[in-house]
Image 1: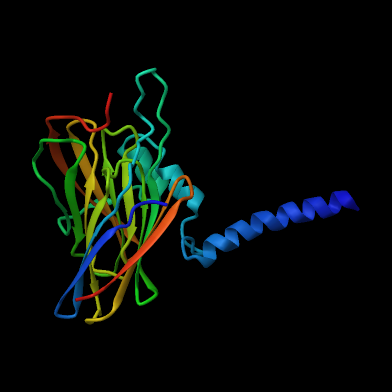
Image 2 (image 1 turned 60 degrees about the vertical axis):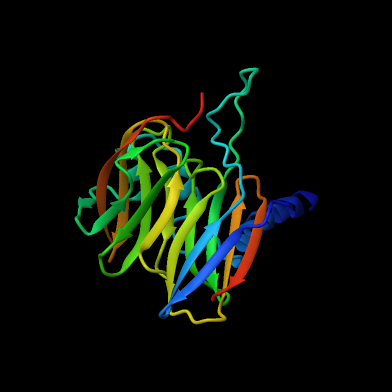
Length: 154
Length: 103
């Protein structure tokens, strides 16, 4: 009797934690699960990260624009803007090829204009890749940024 | 509790230009201290923006976002007096919400 009650409580606890995350709006059922997203943050290199994001075979598109300097003096603070001219843009993601883990951030932009400016860290000179999901398809763009001072310490 | 964010929201037509500056260490988990021990990662992992309580933007961040993160985006369909609220959650479970009124 005690045994079943304990297992029942444990199961309920797991469901409860998930429900709490759903209720504060950080997780939406049907969206890529938190586990999938955090897995994408642990991959190395562009190809593996695209695969973890489900964006394998993204096509290069001139409608995906990366707005960033050609040379960044300080790799700890590199201003980068990503925008999309594609209709029905749903998500934006930014990857840095030579960082220890390529993925810097993903943005769900269905409620805003498909343009986000941010500041990222770059360990060394590298290509950055922007990935855009529009109308269920993935598109990408690439730009090289030269870094004169690395930003990942050590 | 973390320090407050600085949020500016300025209206241009019916589009609100939102700029957010968050105060966070954004430790990568790659660095080592003087004794050679790895400093554990400590970074914002989730960000959410709301216009009058309705979620308009969500982001997932890794440690490659720069320290004291800055973010700029545009929210269509806004008018003066609307409220923009930004919430972040870090990988230690700490969270903070701040809001501002669109001017």
